[in-house]
Length: 77
Image (cartoon, rainbow, N blue to C red; front, side, top):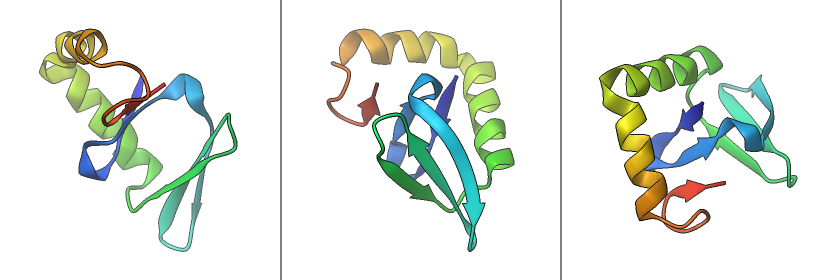
């Protein structure tokens, strides 16, 4: 599963420890201690992931993973 944020940032859920909703934003807490913020709610993030996978996202995901190194570009692992 993926979190698809603004600016085409993509995060693998296996890196995420928590989603914390506060002050009109969602903080994404990563295993390495990094924190990212998004205006999307957790429910919106889930819908974006579902829509991505329904719209051929599995194939797009596989192409992304094979064409980019993890940690380069907009994909982080």
